[in-house]
Length: 425
Image 1 (cartoon, rainbow, N blue to C red):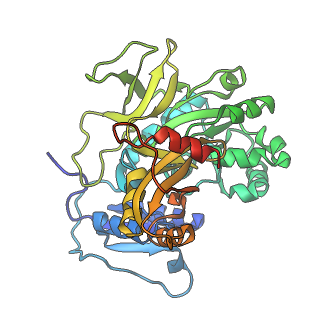
Image 2: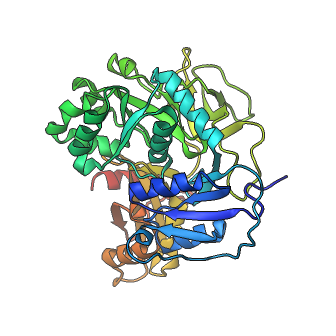
Image 3: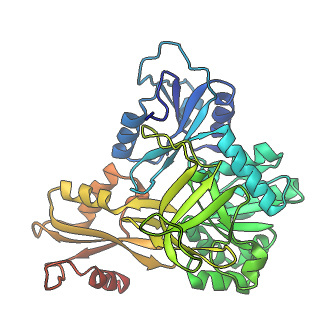
């Protein structure tokens, strides 16, 4: 049994949002033997402390380090000795629990993932208009793909979509891609001025959470080259993608496995189930991370996910849901139990249940139902206190203040009733 990332190598944490500085640090670190940890600059106090305890970085680099006087933050002693092994990149993930973890990747795992996607797309050089954060695997891999294939990447935001799009297309003549979460696609489609530009990409990858049928129907009607995709931090992003032509022909799901990956559906006994049967998704391939920081290394090249899916007779994957209490809202994994624990800790709530409901904009809308300890407990105060310890994306969108929870005869809370109430708000 060996733990991932043991030893005395330099541990550098990058908490950088500005893309150019992010890339500068990334490529500088690639030249030395160390471990680079990608921090989310938007983490709340609790999340940052959790990450620091897990990583114990020697140095943290932030955006403000590049403006004016340099600020360096030593958090652990370092004796100058480094193990003679290649540098590793630690990408944050919610994993199966939604709590902060780091997937341990090497340049080899990232390269395999890039080569597999390039082969699947028939794109020798992958260029991207990146509107996703670089500390997430979906944004980070757009940089890696461009570097390893000789492509280009333009950094932008969904709110300034047209300018980023025009810059990419002015400097790149082919193999141009866009990656979105469903929330971003929903908002871009709401602006008719973006529709002509969206049609120009070779593919628009959409992943991170389930996509509403109404959104897919609208995209088909507009003849957009949507490519629903399935992947995760542990696999260096995409492992299955539905090609745009198949999408426009009416196909659904996440498409076929990429060339570097094998996908199986397994039952409760761990055995592979027949095509058309549901079960947990198991992934095999050399783009899998080496393991999760501080946990046993993955030496068998196989990863049993918490996702439930089905493979049809042609090998096309459909993802049905998750086997744990995690939802994906706006492309972000959220641990429901973590939010419940934080709310209970406040002492102003006697009982609370956090859950998600299907939502056209968010994929899954985060909701909370609670009974207050006293009449002076206000929703605005709960929101304010919660925002101090957790990231903004973990803030519930819908709050149900109840006198009592609806329950079954056995005393269990009727979650379906709470979901109905939330959907009506």
